[in-house]
Image: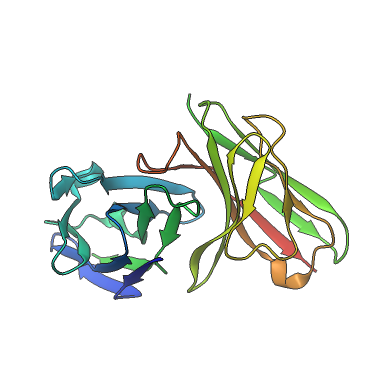
Length: 114
Length: 113
């Protein structure tokens, strides 16, 4: 079985300050991990993915995430927040060979203050 | 353009009136899936399909049906909608085992009154 816990349901930062969105996962097998972003009234867009290559993964729009197996974490970061980053972010785990495919976290709403 | 197309985007219906939400992908993906999104619950899987004529239940299948007669299409059927099925629905597809990430449709906002 696999599960994902997003530790913060809401995060608020000021424009230009760092962003940290936290995600812990549980998986019986080697997982693939993803971060998706959902802007208001939009579909889900893939930000980045980890699939057992480099543990530091770079994504679109300046986002990064680091896979830490010892901590079972996959936190999303960005050095400097922009107003356009305001959205909901989902951490997702997938286990190869799992028929159920993706398991989603409950989401983190990011607010960026001017 | 590679995409997953859902229709309609918005739908208001009455309890008990059968409806179908269509989903089509143009990427020749084997795997397709339906999710519903509710506040505070993230996305929950309704049904998925590994290939043509192969479908299985996800986490919340009650009240829904699907079919996969062609590779590109994966419609979601609500035989007798109820108000607790009011939600935002997403269709998604991926090449195979999901490690490549998914492509999502733009969503269908369904209201059942």
